[in-house]
Length: 292
Image (cartoon, rainbow, N blue to C red; front, top):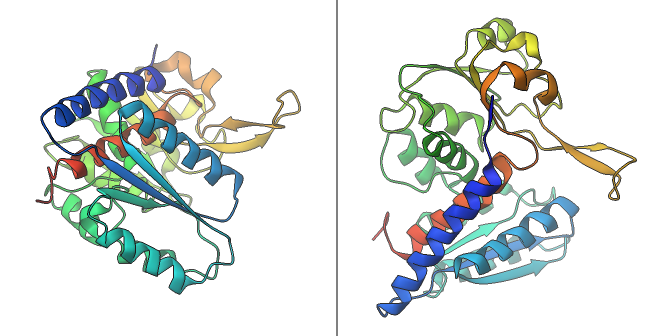
């Protein structure tokens, strides 16, 4: 069993990005600029945004953080999105989700200029990705592809089972894993209503678990020599931790790991790659590598 170290991989990629930024600036180019909008004071969102701002510093990017209270009107938020769309110094920006209930997340996502949509959530980017055109690919699926590639894990012709059908992970992951230039795999998507979920997993060469249920994938669901990618990051109570909780993946790591050829831990697997992929998208945006 080999552990897939997302933390070390992300660190290496950020160093590569920082080197590229140095070259761009040395040649008279512009320092890439990522902006983030944070609404309210959700603990998880605060942590994620802080990590993104820190990663910008490590990559040599300029970063801006725009904060709103949770009672901000949808109109005011949309006005700020338009302001960032029109700002020539901002190469890419994100609106941290989730948003308060009185704001339509879809309306906000669609208001973002798709050429600055480094989260890869805009319907134009999603559609282009689905048919194999160059696009900003949402960060978690992109990070998973990078891990598979850097660990030389064979995907072509393999049976890949994806657990979960979210717009952020499950659906784009399925699209990418079936595409010839990425996964080139035979893909099955399972979810909470799938009647043959366990049997599908037992036949899988690669399982990508993004179902949001701690410890969902057990040893009897995994065949010997499989690769297991755990996207789950659920906070579960843990009195032994200073924070009072720990992060739990969708996979029962201790019992599943001995059967695997490769497996990602939680934390330290997919999580660091998600932020790293956002940095890769920001570099692409800064270089106008996808949309001129």
